[in-house]
Length: 307
Image (cartoon, rainbow, N blue to C red):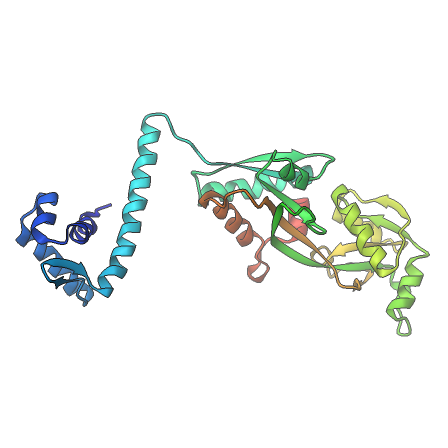
């Protein structure tokens, strides 16, 4: 990266003189003046002007120099990192990401390769959670971030960034849905049926919370091993369940309506508010937002569950 011209401009700003800047740069004043004139002609603006005996940047010059200094900072950082590699002192930023075991395959197949391609100087270390909460790993500072299905971030020390939001539907036998049935009648009929739990243990609290809000007190018949399994059971027309919108396909024979009050499963990144938002963390967050961008054909919630 040739940044000599930028270095010339910074020297002019700091020395406020062609002769002093030229001496610092081991150039003649006339050569430095020629370089400045050529750049000003290319840009179509004046970058420096005389103020008494001093050379000072114009308004346009200040704008250009602000960007120029950022370029020099980036170059200096790159040189430091390359020097560290040569000396065997490279420190790759490591982000500890807590996630439930059901997301492990998705992380390994999708997130890690995409992150390696987008930001090879960042390493994400998964903290796999079996039966406890991934959010708890962040609260107890055993992880920097957590990838969760949100039913409400309650710890005041935590913040959350939604990655994907999908409306929840009540799915049930078609025989319960007719022209005369309103929502209240449907809820009364569902209360006579058994409930099939979703495939993840982490969903159990959210399921009960949303169903209780709508007036249902579920009697759990069984818990599906996957959303494909849950759809299979629902298509047998003997029970009801909660499903995110992306899990319902056109060929399904069961009926479904959005749950009221309206609710959604939210895939979310949870972080400790004291945790610094470093460039590496921002890169990971942007990657996840791109992966789950529903407006551009991104991954669905079911993809993350069952990839």
